[in-house]
Length: 266
Image (cartoon, rainbow, N blue to C red; front, side, top):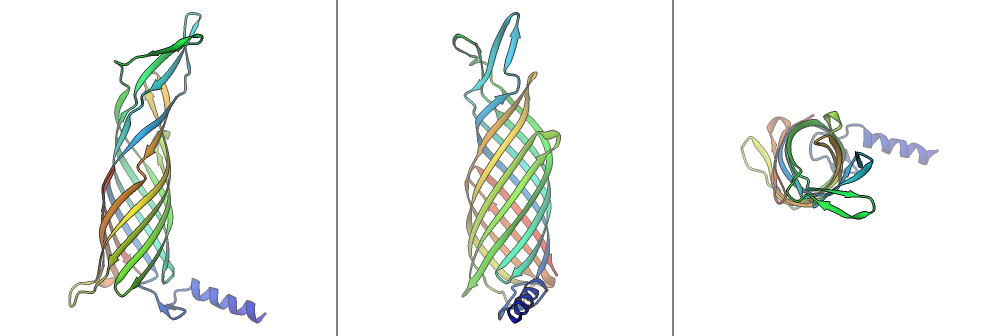
């Protein structure tokens, strides 16, 4: 019974807003809320296209329709959102994200291939390119966590996020798992409105499954995409007076982005 009571007391210290845990102070106020803004251009490869209407009747014949030589897709997106986070432990924070996305999509899907069952391998219509540009919008939902620490002003952290993007009209659905690592140096300016500055470099690894549904003429197609997995990053995290925080970050490669996170801790 004494062991159980002690465990319950320890759990209460972890859950309730305490200033210390096991003698370690929390780096900031336990709760935080942030406004997010991201501008991003992302390129990927089209790995497969599945046409919903497989056979086209012509008289008493049926023709098979396939898409071959798929090329690429480029998405220019703007995201506005909100994030709420909480320090469970001095070195562990968890968070939830909601946002809205607007995107311009440039798709180069490839060439149609027409064939007749039992008659050769079919004909590729090389002069016909199934390309298209369109605009779309949707919602983003995500959860994640951060493990972080500092030793002699050297700051390090790893971050994991799971998110889903749901485009309107069922146009696309994307599930993504992303891991980030950042390493920086933290210092405290004297007598300024900035109480702490942490510039950093880092990288992100993403495991992503994406499908886009699009109309190609009178047909509907489901397109599987392969997106870039690794993106280098650089940024700066600022703690300001009155419990205000600000983070600016950029990535480059096949995923170029600029992000801003303006928050308040309480």
